[in-house]
Amino acid sequence: MHFLRNVLAKVPKAEADMVAAYIRTVFAQPTPGAVRDQLDTVADTLAVKLPAVAEMLRAAKDDLTAFADFPHAHWAKIWSTNPIERVNKELKRRTDVVGIFPNTDALLRLSACVLIEAHDEWLDADRRYLSEGSMALLYPTPPIALPTRTEEAIATPELATA
Image (tube, rainbow, N blue to C red; front, side, top):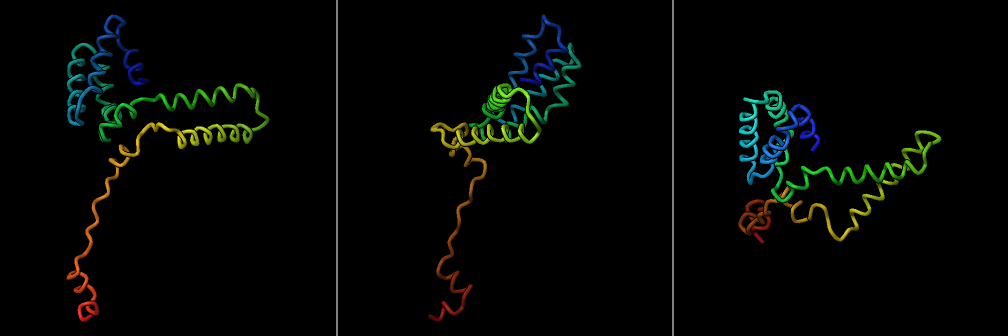
């Protein structure tokens, strides 16, 4: 979202909707390779009319397409900044109530408490932002092969005579 705002600042207002829609096609691709190819296609197409925008896209390619390295189930959650913005809004609301803090430690204590509270709420929530099943896709554990009896006997000769 923030990158898109920066891009649209360099685009004439008449073309802003078209450029935004075209950039959003990058995020609608089904595979990581298609995501990166679409970004290149969008940059090449926009280079004719808006070279500054094309250069911005190419320069930010790694950052814009980083979400594609994760499981597909995570994509929509990764490219959204809503949870971070929600926590920041709660921090702002709580600190605005106090107004002026007597020292930096007081600000840090309040902020830490707000963040701990948010963390506890996320742990206890019935609905998780990223499910345990989708998180398991990040670090799949390979099956553990148990040794057969003959492999054990070779490894420990005293078992072979028993």
